[in-house]
Image (cartoon, rainbow, N blue to C red; front, side):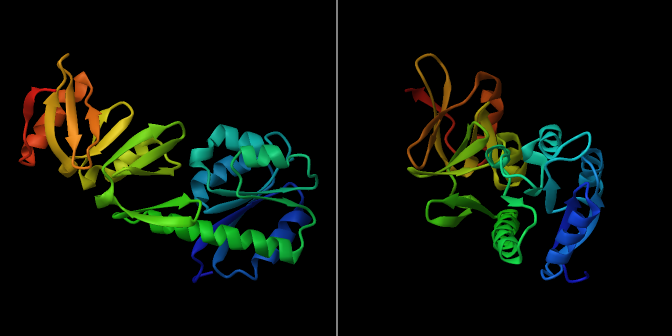
Length: 249
């Protein structure tokens, strides 16, 4: 247990099922079981106390079921989820809930190992993405590491953020507010409700004919600054020695 990299929580109302998952996990020393839960209420409490990296979550439990656990906690605040169930009719709902995998009991060793391979890959990618100077995004070719200093600006895109590097963009599932908190130390500042800009990438500031402030980035992008943030944004740019307000665009 002292050498474990990650923490696992097992949630199932059947003791035999919990024991089975624990036995399957025993062959993966990277994981330490930090708790077992019999129902959804216990899971919600354990998520805060144990802070697991993965929860093996039974769908049908007394009171609060697995789906309700995610709904109450929200998908953004959940660890990786591997659903456990004796039935296969919940598969679509499971993946709509953004579960990493869906295992039908009884689970074979081969099927469990395949699921663990996916889990380990995800956790290692997540660990790399939490480094201060890099972000890991998923593309059609696999995981890609982005250096924060290369990102020109970031915009909200539903439940994702869209990271712009010159004319290319990448998607990362994270709210813009959390991204702002993570990258503030790297000089990113809010331009408007849906966008962040890297200050040292601002080439100049200009004004539209209507008087709106616009940040012109080195990559050529033009990001409008909200009226409420204009003064603070311009002051931050001046602090870096960039040109301030120019003539109307």
